[in-house]
Every structure is written in C-alpha cells, then in structure tokens.
Length: 116
Image (cartoon, rainbow, N blue to C red):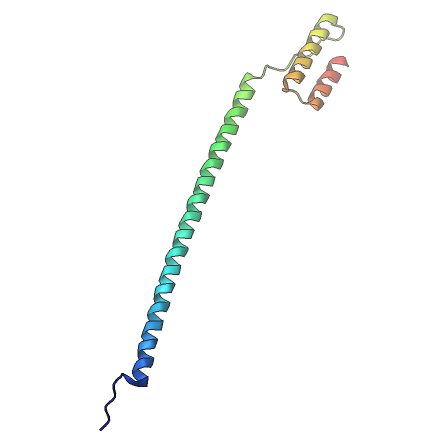
C-alpha cells in the first residue's frame, strides 16, 4: 500500500486559501487604520484653520472698533461765507485724507460740500 507523505492537493489548496484570506484581512485592517488616521489629521487641521479664522475675524472686528472709536467726529458744516472757518475745515479734511481716514472719493465729496 502506498502512503502519502504530504497533505495532498486539497490540503495545500486549503492552506493557501487560509493564508490568502488572512493576508487580505490584515491588509484591509491596516488600510482602515491608515484611513482613520488620515481622517483624524484632516479634521484636526480643519479645526485649527477654523480657530485661526475665528481669531482673525475677532482681531479685525476689534481693529475696526478701535478705528471707529479713535476717528475724530466729522467736521460740522461751515456757514456760507465764513472765510477762516472754511480754510480750517479744508485743512482738517486734508489732514484726514493724508492720514488715510478719508478715501479719495470721500475727500472730494466733503470738499465739494464745503465749497458749495
């Protein structure tokens, strides 16, 4: 009677199937863990960006509030024919324009209003 020394063809196929299945499961788990880490990193980065944007928005709002509080009140309208008052108001407008408080358009409109 002949005795077989190995597992045979069916045994080898079964062993190969188990090894292949295990390798597939392990690679799937590794890929899943890597994807989870990537998602967590992306969420952390998005949260940090959101916090930075909120801080920038708050700083901008504070700067606007400080600028509005520090800005001098607009010059009162000059009476028609007040020569010295007109010159002082024009000088004030020029100073505000030079400081960047008034834009070119605002300066031109205020000057036209004074001169009319």
